[in-house]
Image (tube, rainbow over all chains, first blue to last red):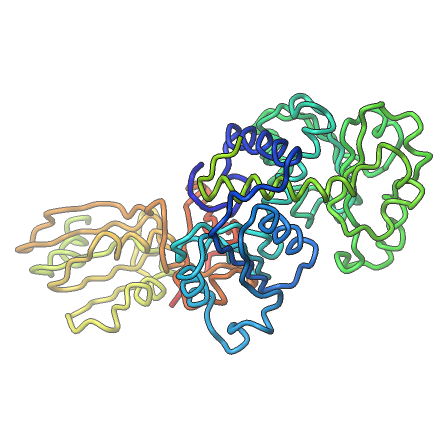
Length: 305
Length: 154
């Protein structure tokens, strides 16, 4: 590992990722272990995120650690004007590990520079959310049995969606083929296409969300097309229903196909998909628990069998 | 011709530094970037002087002052062709081109209003990710800024 904090998925090498996937699998078999006995862990949520916070806090609780922290900046001293630096230095005096979410981009990197204990980035604005990426990787690994040579289709908001950008970078170790399905306004940014070219990763862009694309896919990664991302609302109205997955569209898909979504879902996956065994987004969220247990132990240097 | 120019531009200093080949439109930005208004030494500033390569150029002569590397190299951001002449006893004892370091601390402002560096009392840090054309990447929010969009912190 390049440093003892996890700020970006790029802080993990391929070996780190494979090691974490094996650890996550082990935690899934037995999530209740008292390996954090005597440890205190802070969850500092300067920006509220119930789903991510509960997942982390469950991970710590099941490992026998204690938690301090806040779930909203309004109840922290940052509402009195305290700088992030001061808050982090103060809290790092008390705890063994800090898990933080912040609305400003780069906040976690900066915190990792001033903190005396490891930092886990639980999301910094539109920038990075590496534990989401780890749970995505674990979900792919678990459902496909491998991360190598997979055909991954990303659908929806590929411009602003940080989860797709991080997943794309993390998958670059594993020889994937990508299909990017998005409206013109929300296409995959140039820098990520250049990244693919530099890593010899084949990718194909589509503006149509067709069964032809779905039928060759191993992992269908859906994201939400949000109205506020559009400068032209006419364009939003035109495309908003184009990127909706319906159960009938999965009829000819590969048996191993799984549908992933970082959640929350609004309408981009029709409810009739939920009963299809290929729908995997709720188990995916559950996998976050095991992935986070693995990450916490790795950063604290705790070896688990 | 070049001998005359040298005498006019450089030889007049007994000891000090001459910053030559500054693009005319960047001259006063360089003055400000180096905080030359705060040093008490004699300073001569010339602008719109004839230059074979640049067309017009600016030149700054600072008597009895020698810049540290990290102090002077940052001007490469806006005057990449600038040359530094170190003068001792009327002679050019050292002449070099400015070069950007791989990391720039506290020099450039991040263009991302949501970057932590624009919201905390802290120094910015940029990595030079490409030199030609110039591209800087924020260490914190990872946004990339192209050469013509770079904003210098005053």
